[in-house]
Length: 101
Image (cartoon, rainbow, N blue to C red):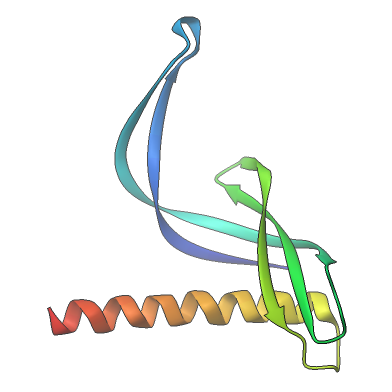
């Protein structure tokens, strides 16, 4: 179970031999969110914990997303659906904002 969305991310170039990282340009790339588990579930609200992947690389940090559980069905599936709906709403908002500019 996972969802993939295109997102703008800040690129960074690392020069490990010198301990230097340089911020680069914004890039649009596919980011995949895979549900791992549910935390802080009180029967109504829950937090989905997602593993994040860009290309072949996984983030060492987890993405947490709080959502309202319907009371029926699999909360992990609902976490993914809620996250997808949130991304869809963000995309609609960006389109609306750019159309009015």
